[in-house]
Length: 609
Image (cartoon, rainbow, N blue to C red; front, top):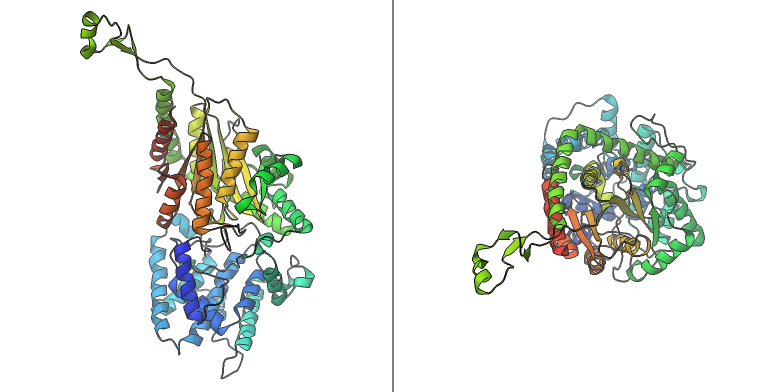
């Protein structure tokens, strides 16, 4: 399940939803995409038909009512199976072609499952997978999987159409909506012992789905979102490509109380800001203007991050006893625990692939040594001694010119500093271990060549663009990089501007030093806070242009900027527009070291050093 990162695919998804709904005057709450960015035709049709047969406003509000629950992603996927069943049975008499669409979607499910790696399979929620497997096996005529008693009952409950107790020959949209919401609530109570309305995290005055929707519709949802986490099979999983998140559409509605709540939330997750209050206000006054008006910034250094982890009882190493972080807010405690689990997953991935990773570090270190050595030597010079240039020998007697020899130029000291910037947004959820390992490999290789390197993760959450330093430039230990954790949005332009600000205001270096900024990105800027050029959200072509302008400004100020691209082929135009030819696309860890070395060589040569 993924939100619409892809402008072209979004238009297609929207047209499918509008066509199925039979109206073109609304902004749908949900869109469905496959992990490759392509619109999911069948489930977008189901979303449109949901608006036709049910009150989509109240359905959306029910989904929002349990958004703070750790299993929210799994709940979404279960319940959409039930809604799909109900809407399909309602629409089939009027649209017989829907049966073929449904069968094709079932075939696609099994086809995609065959292409998943073992790691991707283990990332799936098995209870969700079993229900999906059962549903699509029924649709395609395959043998049903063996289910235990609980799984059979769940499958029967998720047949919303056969559980219809409305008792009406003529369907009523209002009655059907009430019926579906009642089943969804019973499903969560019976199989997960969870009642969204009774959740203590939901304020008393907002209990009930209508009150929840009223709140969401009147305020920017960005102000109330949580740090999105990998749940179940993970957002973006091809087999579960249904988007079920309500997306904030309005410009930020600030209040002092709300801003204070959001700031406290950010500080609880990431630690205190490295700037004083005056310094932070100065940075925001310079950077949060124009397209970024209304946004906030938060800068966290590695030491503060580690101290914050310890303060809330988060394990800092594999040897530590795992305990639930002791934060008074259960939502924050849940998220901190997920961060702790992801840190362990990153460490485990590094350990499981240690031979390949160590070999890549060795190879990249060796190539960097040769590369940096070549840039430390000056260009060849003509002189009175050295190696004779035969074709110039005649100049000695004829022109009395002794400069017919060539010798190596004087060795010069090159001061290089590298900063690695990791996109840590929601779209990176299914690649967290790989991205953390790649940042680790680059940093280790540079350190072995005595090159200072820092690693920073960035994300946007509740209106704050957070730059979270995982490894400081003076740290010799790279294990902090393994605290990389994906969640939230990615406002690339503001993050790049913030890095530029750090170079100019906080980390001034001698004029002859060379600064290199390397971004690991999917080249898909996306945030729910709008800007003057973006319309509803920070996304699409306007967001790409905003990021490109930030890169151009960095380069104009002497900061070499390049990208390691992890993303869909549909975003290749984006990465070229933002970074020009200074990028590589990496498909596997095996090719990583060689590709990065080639990229660094290209960037350094063009630097004129």
